[in-house]
Length: 139
Image 1 (tube, rainbow, N blue to C red):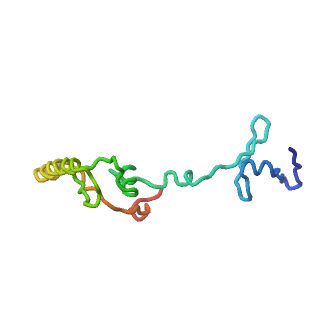
Image 2: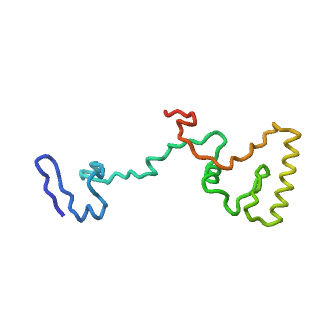
């Protein structure tokens, strides 16, 4: 396919190529010269690229804890001793008994040494706040 360079340096990209590459009005293109050839590339700018690095984790926070807050507990997630079991969730009796035993041991350990580095009770529901609301600064 051929195109003619206009007086103002403009070129019309043939429709077949625009369709093949998904080019539409407003699409950003990058121009480079490699080995004497003009290379035109579609600039990829997707939502993931724009969002990368936008959210920062608080100290001690993990991606898994955020996902659990947003999605809820997965069927095979471990139940930590400091978590309270909800009555509306169906669990086998053996799981409930094991949790009760581990929770009692954990609570006893907390009573003996409350500042022994045990994790704080899990937050059961929380909405993510914008970084500015959490006191973070943007560099």
